Image 1 (spheres, rainbow, N blue to C red):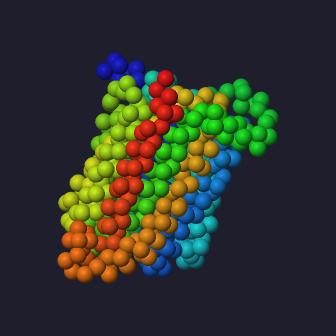
Image 2 (spheres, rainbow, N blue to C red):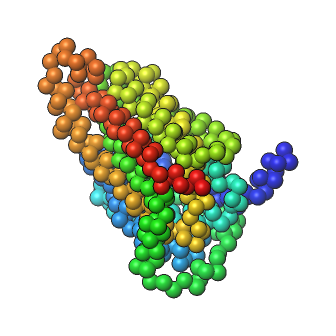
Image 3 (cartoon, one colour):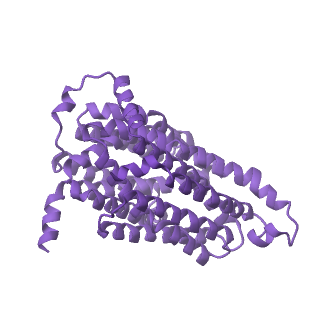
Length: 430
């Protein structure tokens, strides 16, 4: 108990920030979840709904490389507060449009683009703020705590959002979102102390110079650069998976909306359990080995089980095996980044990392949808009864998505094996 009290005292600033930001994240997640339902019922188009994510990611991918350089120059708390305020104002605008029954899908595209821009600027400032308010010995622990809150939100947001949506409507969900924002804003503004470096106020470098410094650091530090490329390749495979996942579970025999909800709930619970385990696991001798092995384990099992499974129970097993090790991977990845990148460079380096690591996600979503609709489903539709592909993956709609899972399982394994042999990544162990 004495050690626990000491840890809580030393982490008090971070814990205040983490708990309130997680609460705000729940409100935002509920709004996003409800908007997906709203947009699909309005348009009946998966493409129109997927544009919500594209609009959110576009500013993040395109502008992250500049956002970190700006973040390094600006006061971290002020940056986070301003970004949160602008995002809240877009939510207020959406609530007003809902009240006057004037909300249209293009309004959501604009709102998501603005929120994506604010997240682009806020994220590197938040990363640096956490580094400054937290002792180094807790770097691995916070990765588990972050995954804990994210997975808890994954479990809660569809349940709470669906209940509120049915009882009080969309306006009540948006109101809850604003309430959670107000709590997080007040705590950050008045209760959390984020020390500022004297170097921040003295930085007068031009924006492009700062960006070049971030890129130059990654070119020089090949281990960090190659690790980012590794994650970018994994994100490409994972986003293809995300695009094909609902298409298969909603359309093939044995699948349904209930099956999709069940498997997603299992994934949420699994990441919650994994984050708890990651918070208590001792520092490994080799963080790189843990990262590589966790990703290889995830890529090896889940996609194959989803490809060959025919029942929700089997798909739940795949979801469990695919996600149980991801929080442990993430905690060690975060620790490597914080330990190897100097604090004064973290904002600009994280921003370059975001552009490089996440630009593959919208590409993967597009590829996933295109490959399911235009390649794998037509291929399976041409198969005759009794053919080897029909025996392996079934027939009818959804069998093409299953075949795609089989293909990306090999893609994920090959990516892991290729980067596992990268000598520059292993140099991070020194």
